[in-house]
Image 1 (spheres, rainbow, N blue to C red):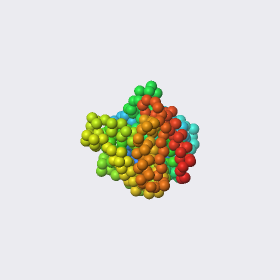
Image 2: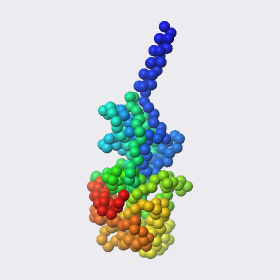
Image 3: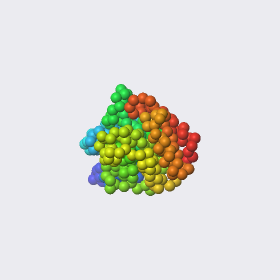
Image 4: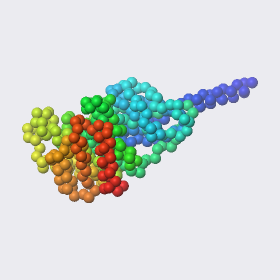
Length: 358
């Protein structure tokens, strides 16, 4: 009799184990990350816009254990290519249901950080698979890789502001809808976005410029350096100078004074700064095809000198794999809307199709 009790107890424990959820820790090799993501034993730190974690699974649902730095960030959930409702995070460490009640079977899920690092970091601790759901092989790394260096336009600043108020707070920014992310998806490419609203090449609206940020893993820490061997893009797109074009005309701006004193930079200084930044990126990626872009705000309006500065800098570099491309001036107020971001993506996709072999 005792033997049968033991057998029944073991069977009960086995059934309980089958009914429990499966934990997939942040450092599990079944997870595929995109973008500059810092990983520790306890958590992956999603800070840059477009950082994502993707898994394949067989079953019906997935949860995630997350904590947001300020409770400002939104995460997108994309399942089998379908975008589900976004999740608004708070600053407590807790479990969020990403998807449930799916038809049993094979599925792909991407958890995507839609806002830039100014809204704070998000700590991702683990996925939790629903009962009778199992992890499958990690998503295959895509054959193509692209990286963007940019400002608010590339972040997707205010692209959700349908009232046209150009609001830059987290509810109105969605990098997934930016021209950069759309372009990466079109080409089925790995995606890295190194961008910050307000940043420039010579001067920004805050005390940091892209040449000081481009090589960071944690953008907020000058001692945190990105290992460029971890991600080697085939194509690099640089879309900068919009903020410079404004601030150089504002001698009373604190950052103008910080960078220039009382005298705005001469054309030669502007060209040299841009050329040196691109040269530094070229050193990191000697085989990449680099597109030096600008637009679609007023830095590319008729009569603007800024496309000319970029053209001169690129000509000085004398590198056949460094090209220029300027988005047409959108001629509307504020930052690019969702529709204008799509127009930029269409424009860039067409340019890449015609000029880039990868």
